[in-house]
Image 1 (cartoon, rainbow, N blue to C red):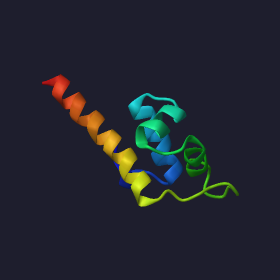
Image 2: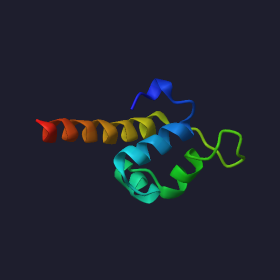
Image 3: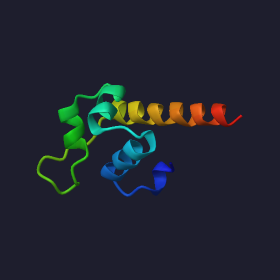
Image 4: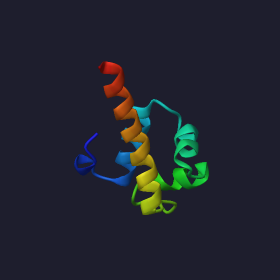
Length: 77
């Protein structure tokens, strides 16, 4: 996934969920984010409940994606 091509935080989270093949709650737990907080992070930017993700949350999701990519490369070898 190319993060620079995504338009928003919401797009990043949707793409991460799809790539990892998990539910929203499973994504939150795996990233160490409270499910309720993740719900606010994935709201549209113009939503009253939208919250910006802290850098640690971004990194946690990115680490999950990197781990998945490494596992996929390893299994393809």
